[in-house]
Image (cartoon, rainbow, N blue to C red; front, side):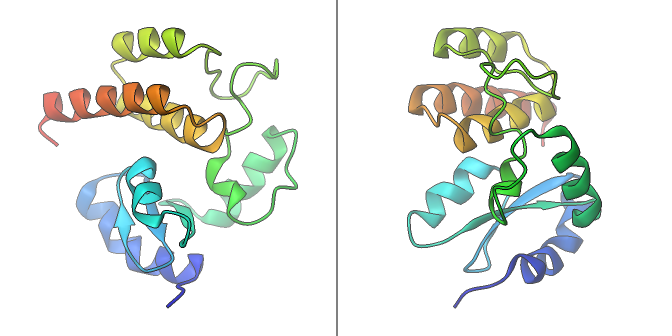
Length: 150
């Protein structure tokens, strides 16, 4: 059973308000996740993961294409809008990730905004996808989530 991104968006619509989030991640088997990494873990190699935005997806995609140098990645790649922005492209985009895992770990330890960490995770998974960097970012998200009682 393959569920389209549009159908996933409909499934996720009430969850945005209930969970008070701007992004969710859905897999083509109909499962919805708060964290991209968890969706990808669930999906494995058999399913596709889509980023689902609370805002209008078309408006978000148009804005992303205007900022992203390589906007020809196609559907599915738009879910990782900052994936190319791993700090080595010199672009002045929304998020510049450091190149080293050590630098990412240091930034995660200092960061207090969970949305910044979620964007870092999204960029890391969509880009270099280094296990140690992903683990450090996920740990930071969990730490902030526990601290806020979410």
